Length: 262
Image (cartoon, rainbow, N blue to C red; front, side, top):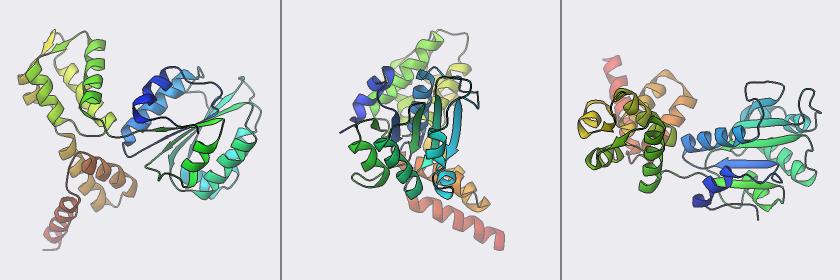
């Protein structure tokens, strides 16, 4: 079965198996899914800003237009040896699952399929199809644990040529949530704030670093009141992954609505 454990994913992405023409990245940490998808896309060697080489699709779009992904996969590239078909926001769409099933039976010769999905239940739908195929691989993406956060922190510090005191690192870990992109954004902001110095201290953390969970809470409430379903889904997921209580979002939104009506 073509699947990896969570701790094996980064190693596989560092040296992808070229025989895997379909790559499914899934899990509750959407930031980590997106970050790893970008890493895999870069490994293809294709120019990611070239619409003739990289076709970006949305899961809902593929579901509305049954057979769309299949047609794209069988299209002969005009300006490159192959194309990357990058599908985002995949979930339980039947049309997408049907197209992927067809492509596992008759692999596309000139296309690589990259799929970003949310948390998919084991043994069902898209995940089951990919895991059972010989030319596809499923890569899980779960919320960062302490050692994963340390790896992200070390990566950003290394790129900036900086170090961090132990108490600063401990404080930063407490502030970071379970979403990889949000956490990396906080670290990048911190590095930029301390630019010109060799070491980041606790005073820098206290002065600048925000709480991802708290930020996601505010974003979820705002998105709910604005009727932005997609933004709410992302922010609410981040809030819950960071240890926030779901009912607090609803309670805050209700209080704001009552204040507006008063």
